[in-house]
Image (cartoon, rainbow, N blue to C red; front, side, top):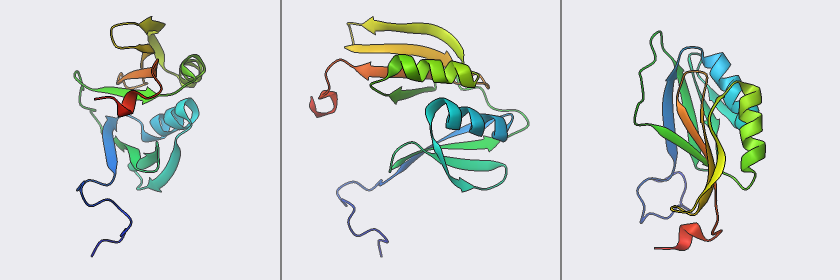
Length: 134
């Protein structure tokens, strides 16, 4: 029986957790809490889950040798790109590419690296109705 009967059953997935292996879970937790304002929802010791939205989460697991993630890009959408980038840099991110307009994709965005080298993008869509276009 579904514990959440209000969920739309036309979609089998109701929530999403993106997991990252990190070298220091406390450092990474602090980075994402301070840099993005994420909030802790579950602490499992060497792993924790932070809330991004009501249905999207970031999971962090401490591992002696974090795996490289060359194809992974975590993209965070916000109206306040410059402020978010400044908060991430202040929390320990490395700025890889300063914010700029990208006319091809209709976005304003920047690229950064988190303390473990995971690539982050912070962006704003120029069309506020981007998620209703097909």
